[in-house]
Length: 262
Figure 1 (cartoon, rainbow, N blue to C red):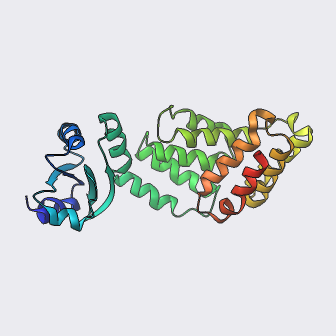
Figure 2: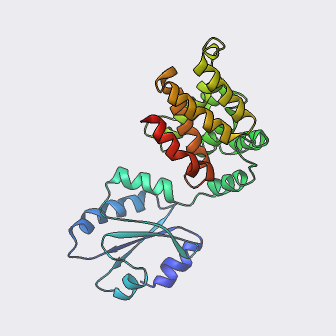
């Protein structure tokens, strides 16, 4: 094995999964055949290189292999992800689906990087065009649903309904449905005090006033946690997830949200 040629150089054209293993390692012997079978089935997507840590202690030290089996995914000459321990075939298939580089996903990330916030109606047409080129790409479907839901909740709900239980985007699809419930709140519901709060939160989101929306949703939770199938809670969770855990508003309001639920 020539690690530079077989892993580093090759990873510039084909992702390479390196399995750091040893003969004495029981979990390694369990994982090995599963990896080899999948590498054969998916040879057009990635390559497998096995590194015996007893024979290549220098490589194990260089790549900080502390326990085995340890599998590191190389792309364009560097490690982009890894896992430790013996995974079953279904678990390994899901891991690969999530972590293998995907040119379409890289293109989608670049497109979403142009977003001027959420919701961004200016992204709807480019995302629709992107989906015509990459039909069925779940990440694009959920992105379009997220940016569509404020203006056309029914269309967003239809997109979210395509994503089945067990799919990695299923949780985000349920978030879209929660926001669709918020934007489709009936006039009759909005006639109640809590309904008026939820309607105000929806209007704030349409206007891009996310902080006002969060404040109003938390106020609604404090008034009645269970109203409309816990809509205020579901909508707040959806908004936190869209913004991301590191967003300033998530950091500022997550604790207030938790306190309102107690």
